[in-house]
Amino acid sequence: MDQSSIDTLRAQPVLPKNHIIDGKSVAASDGGTMDILSPIDGQVLTQVAKGTATDMHTAIASARAAFEDKRWAGQPPAARKKVLMKWADLIEANALELAVLGVRDNGTEIGMAIKAEPGSAAGTISYYAEALDKIYGEIAATPSDILGMIHKEPVGVVGAIIPWNFPMMIGAWKLGPALAMGNSVVLKPSETASLSLMRMVELAHEAGLPSGVLNAVYGEGAVVGETLALSMDVDVLVFTGSGATGRRLMEYSARSNMKRVYLELGGKSPNIVFADAPDLSEAAKVTAGGIFRNAGQVCVAGSRLLVEASIHDEFVAEIAKATEIMRVGDPLKLDTMIGAVNSETQLQQNLGFVETAKAEGGEIVMGGQRILEDTGGYYMVPTIVKGVTPEATLSQKEVFGPVLGVTPFETDDDAVRIANSTIYGLAGAAWTSNLSRAHRMVRDVRTGVMHINTYGGADGTVPLGGVGQSGNGSDKSLHALEKYTNLKTAWIKL
Ligand code: NAD
Image (cartoon, rainbow, N blue to C red; front, side):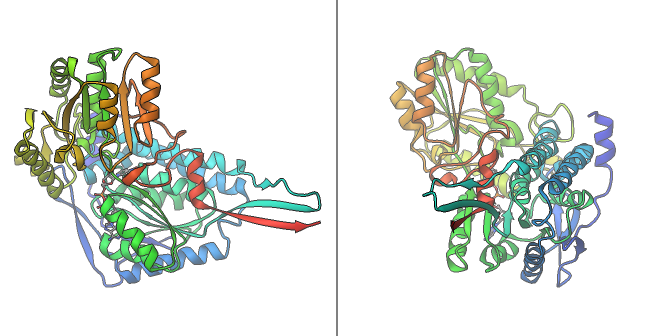
């Protein structure tokens, strides 16, 4: 990856895009389109079809027909594996093009995007491709005159609703296991970042995925997302996004066919630094990356820093030092470490949280303001606020932006109590040289993933799922396959 290749790709126009239904490019049924703005400069990047409820019904019908005639589920596992492996290869071969397109659409800094988006998506698709012919049914322990068999079957039609922060990575977390199990899928990307994910869907068809197996509809959540979630013909709904939308999806399921709903929601993840951390300056550097990369728009971001009181001032100074050298700016420059905030709305929300934190007694250590406004884009200085109480808004509500709240603690019990004092339970970390304390933190902090002496970077071999109001079910690892599988019992009298 070099700067001139990136600059060449960013200069290319982005052609208007349609839905992909039954393997074809399809315009909105009423001809509607919507503008896609780039957070880099606030300018219109392109137009995409603005989906209608009719478009979504057409896509669901296409997925249903593909599932019922077994054009995908009925293929031998080795054949499905070949297609998915080829798809992963195509994603890798087009990695830079996909990453630059995605960055123009959502503002993630390119250094992170290249790994987290096409890199991770290709890895995820090949992981599930390799797994799909190693999935066995079971024979139950029955009396000798009975054969009890447990078959693992695809669920049918999967609806997948995706957010804007890592569209390809999160899209692949759903598409990989869903397609590996033989399901058909209807995908609803975010209205504010869809272009790279839709290009990835095109590549699936180039790899040989049969038409109708993977359909994708652009449009607003309240229109096409709601139609998908209310459909009587969708068997499982998988979602990553905000808690408010997740709550609605559960209601839509109850109001329609009681489809299974799996939610990956927000977090307010505690990053706990003890005085006996192995290396405080390394902890500060990783902590800064763990909250500020992608402008804090990371579900597992360590947005609450809990620091043992005896090292509080020293550690806050270290983290400010580590943050000051993180260059904020044009996400398509290789030396940028923090890119653009995804939208003007998101930026204003972030700034609002800073004002509330100040009003509630928080003290700004650094940041708190918008910068580079003359570019037309949406940029914010990474912000550290100290003196944040566990009850403060900044400790309780997800910002989803580059804002870190710092809270001191005195004892291990104190740290655990504060860590567990939100509605969320997505991720967390503890920094310590004490092995027993490390294991106690893993045991006692209520999260889906707990890091020790690091933050982030858990790869596809381990599950990511939340507890509390951070969600249910898991993405990644072989456990994710369970969401896309029905168990069927055969009880046979011999
Ligand atoms: P969002 O809930 O606003 O939107 C997510 C998706 O839901 C979009 O595609 C949107 O169009 C759709 N949607 C919105 N309203 C809908 C409705 N009424 N019916 C159906 N679909 C609807 O979330 P966002 O702002 O795009 O994403 C940020 C959130 O995602 C944050 O809370 C973040 O923590 C969370 N997130 C979680 C994980 C995880 O793995 N747990 C990963 C990334 C992001």
